[in-house]
Length: 382
Ligand code: UD1
Ligand code: UDP
Image (cartoon, rainbow, N blue to C red; front, top):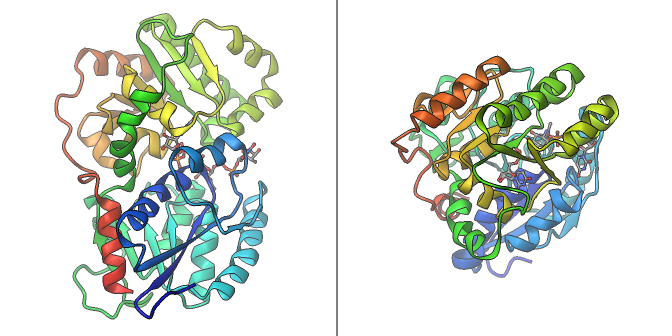
């Protein structure tokens, strides 16, 4: 309920693991500083629903409980996005917010963006402007469409602003802002806010898995191009195990459910071998605090995750990105991370990253206060 005419109401739509994590930073900023000016109503689409992909983050990151749980669940892209839209439209009509806030590039982001735009509610995109220039990724479609429906576009990086300018967005334009006269703002990365905020708590309250002995690498794999073709999936998993053989580092691998289901379905015997291999410390998806502790202590991270490659940078851990390109281009340009879709190159990259670890870690992602900045800007412009 709006308390006064100065009180603005936003609906924040989350659904997949990384969005829940990202949303923690703005929710925290609102609770700490702006709760007499900004009311946040959280809506969870239910895109991710397993306890360890969703509920765990609310508890440990102190995120307010969603007022609406849409429980949309898994499905094909069209059906999943459509179900979200139907339910989100009803919520937005009922709540009558001043704006809808979305994060990143998932189907939950796209569904909320379309609903807000069609109802003429200002859309605020946090993590705007990122581009992989690879439209075979569902995320690339989602983020482009979302950006072009938005009124306020908060980009974590300078390259994001540059991408938006290349698509016709203008910097420094005067208000009032709308989807036809959007404002683009460089704000830093809310994921850095969280990493800095929670790093000490992770050190104090969590410990490494007991199976780890000595130096270790951390890996995550969930992108369709690494998981959906069984041959590729097997080769990726074998490449992780080879890190142990060649570099004597165990690889901790929290398995995303997508990856686990596909291993069970297509490669059951190989998966059994992975479970008993001394090379791997296999585990269920981890909570955020366990995850950032591992990221900060690992000698190396191997991942196809957008968020994990950046957290590797935050914790100054060299990273191999199992993709042909990344939207976080500064990671590659600075030498802190290496792109390696080609699995034969991993060995060489590990050698390079371990023998010549990056020495400089410029502050590409801001100062850890992105969420505060965003909240303030929201209040100025809504
Ligand atoms: C989604 C996002 C991706 C993001 C990732 C973060 C899209 C198109 N993709 O990918 O951008 O990087 O989340 O993790 O939005 N499943 C479960 N339990 C769950 C959720 C999913 O078992 O709680 C399984 C289901 O079999 C489901 C599969 O994982 O079909 C994929 O889930 P989905 O949300 O469609 O895509 P992700 O691969 O998780
Ligand atoms: N993460 C986590 N537990 C895990 C794997 C990842 O808490 O087992 C966190 C990770 O620290 C980061 C976020 O999830 O904050 C990244 O999400 P994900 O890799 O699922 O998606 P992406 O960033 O690729 O969209």
